[in-house]
Image 1 (cartoon, rainbow, N blue to C red):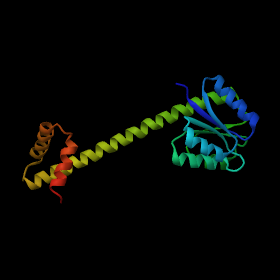
Image 2 (tube, rainbow, N blue to C red):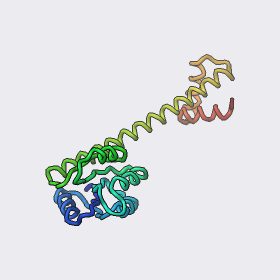
Image 3 (tube, rainbow, N blue to C red):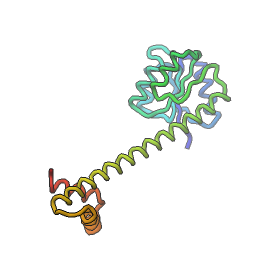
Image 4 (tube, helix red, strand yellow):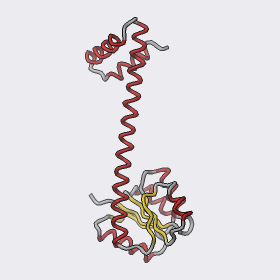
Length: 190
């Protein structure tokens, strides 16, 4: 499936050039904007896979627009600029910026940067999902440990017997162990 990209650049010739380079490389340019305010509006409605955004624009600059978009959505952003000043680079690190391209833009610099940004964004999503899964597992283990402790105290059982009782109940009722743990915790509030 074609990756959906939005191009935000106040100079119409540069915007057209970047869009054509992307289309020639097989990307779907879903929107173009000339300022940061329009970029935010389009990001909210279209949710592109990547935004390529100029830093210096009228109304709302690219750094501020990137920050607003990053706070709401996890859309990767590649910045375009005619400036390579350190202050811009430092500010860019604060938003969901995955790359920084200095104008003039060529196909040789744009396409690899786009591909890397899209892959990094994909990796970030996978890492986030893995962290969330690990957090769920940790919370479930905590529930099981707490319920096991309650059974040990309430029924005067050793640790292994309390765990076996929970596991047996889980299999008998065909419920996940964490659901059994929640039930035990609710039945015997501390």
